[in-house]
Image 1: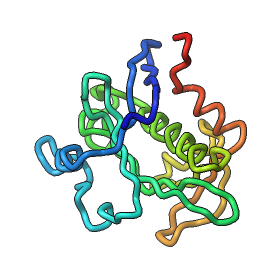
Image 2: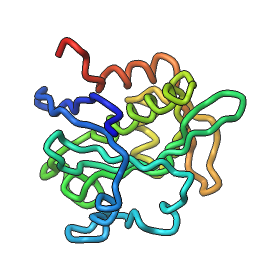
Image 3: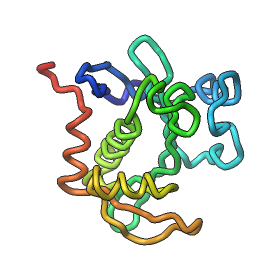
Image 4: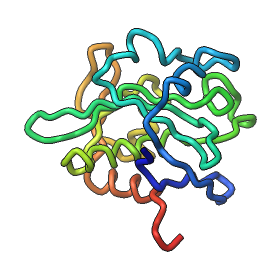
Length: 178
């Protein structure tokens, strides 16, 4: 099932049509094959059956990224982003920025989390943890995320909501007129 008509906007301004679909066993298996991903998506941690796992792909089927999400109901509905990862040829911890095929695709996966929150009856609210200082700064200054605490692992936790969520969502949503 395809869940989105999203676009990836490259830094040169060009657009790549992408889709976010439920990740398949084959998608997850690719993470442990050559070229290896940073994380094996068949690990015990990511195999939690409560996690919703999605794949970001080009329309011709190229796997660009994976995301694991957890919809939460606690008085209000929001989605907690468990983990996001780019394919090796675009992953900033594996490939130099100047050599990466895609840059900034994590924002597309954040936009999808906002869509999930809306689909689950929430207002597009998303929680996530900044696993590095660079991500912390990016979430604060580029996304407009609000610090809301610290995770059990000590990572800064952020909320993306309201206008910041709407702006991020619409940045990557494919409009009908396009």
